[in-house]
Length: 140
Image 1: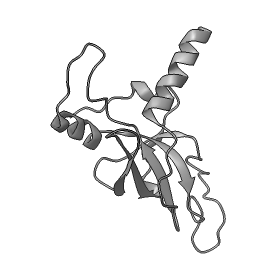
Image 2: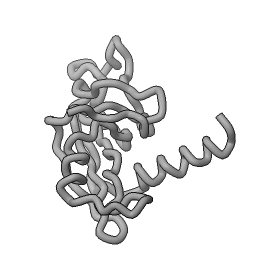
Image 3: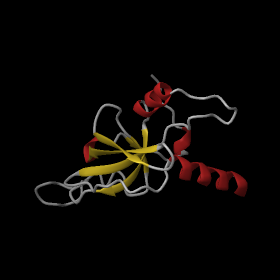
Image 4: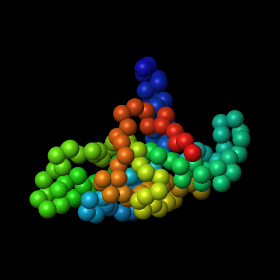
């Protein structure tokens, strides 16, 4: 991959996962995840995306960035020892998240934009993404 491609991916990742304070920290065995932002209101070619399209994309979004782990995440609850399987993800990892679980909320960011966060149980993490998280698409 060329340096310009890497730089472009980094810029795209910063746009999809801007630095925003979620206003919460996970407790217990929970994982705090920032979900990938929905597309902008207008495409580069000038097509305006209706809010319903953005809402659908946000609801179908399977990718998130781990921003924090609760103190019991990936540990045996009775002994506090790490799981035999190990830690499934850590802060900064990109993961697949379930569509229909977790507690979700929006945090205002910029002009008329929101960033979505969710908290889910540690055992509900579906997978750690090892490739480009921007290339993961949801299928309905």
